[in-house]
Length: 75
Image (tube, rainbow, N blue to C red):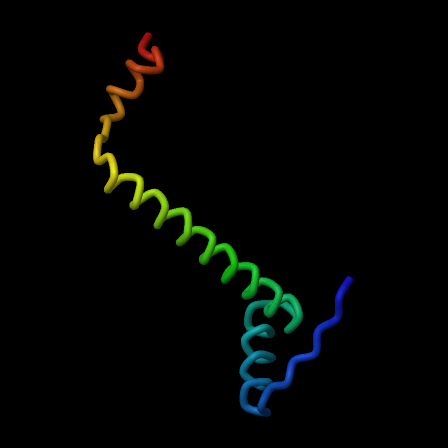
């Protein structure tokens, strides 16, 4: 386990505490959740950008029905 110190202004500290309290969580949980969400958002954006780049290189698309046929999922 790692402990992190964070310096906050009194105003920011109060904001964090009130927000955490309104959401039924500790300030530690609020910060941990916020950082994890930020990491996930940046990861998702990276995956999206790679997918868009791949699409621009080859803009071929398939309908849902075409994919079902390719995968022989039609009954």
